[in-house]
Length: 434
Image (cartoon, rainbow, N blue to C red; front, top):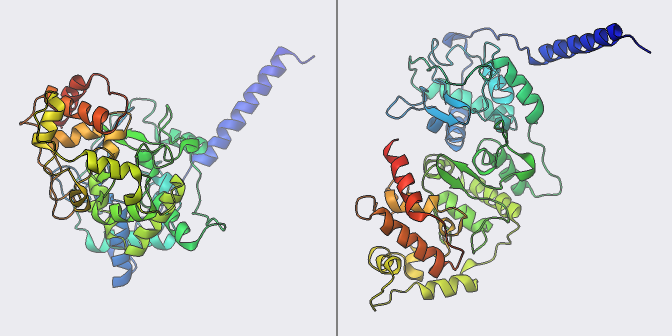
């Protein structure tokens, strides 16, 4: 029988080996700095390709602070562990990535490690960018180094508490939760499907918002695209669990990504607004169609005509304004404030969604519907030629809640949302503090 001393020594030895192994795995050396004069030259086609991909990854969104210079960083990303400030990715040599070589940039995108060898926090979605091919990553580098103005702006200190702020510990997070490597095509699927999957899972990182996360902030792989909360909005499920009365088809997805509006689903607003209007719509039509093909297959929806759906026909008929006086507050307010735009097939075709089948009306939580009712949809975020006014100052919390309750009950015929006036008040307050 082994002695206590021998058992102890064995445990210590195993621990030392484990720590040494982790250290080897976690260590990444610095990559030598590269001056602007040493950078390779880039042709116009590569730079343009990089511009489009940078837009598709909505990089400027996360790397530009409100009122700040493009790509200069310091956009605050609130997490359950504190605030992370996005880094400066302009070609400034001192505070940005101006001293990075293509190799260093590629490592950051594919492995989540910066030029100096420090691990990046997963607020930067390298777990998606790792799927991108080298040519696409190099094109983004070419665009940033050639077309983005250098800005000397130091990145603020993150508010992540000890010991979570220790960069080397991110290597353990990666070991547990990140599947590194380039996208591998599914040979059972079409080229178009694979192109859509490559874009959606890679540069567009759709799962970063539409997939729930575990207690340590990692996407739950078994629940890919199952829906999640993001920036006080709800990113709906992109699977068959999506609550829409009309399935998202490939054609509907493609139109939504092109215009920011789905005829039978709603408008890209909140965090999704810039994703479409400043991002994905820059992709060529063939790529948008490919993403639509992929996402529709994920949801299991054949590309049928939604206009033939009996739910659509019944809802459009039910939505026609009734001239009679309504005693119910929500129905009366809907008739006076909403029905003029949201009432028949023509209005739906013009990009003003039918609110009975709108995704926001059918989610388990009313957050998205309330956000849009309070703050509207601006010309930048709405489909071309269509805007929605904000009712923040025109309607009280009780009145907004009454309209939401009416839509949920009488139009969508779904179980009531609880505590609507309080939810409206909370969302109104959230917007006022940002």
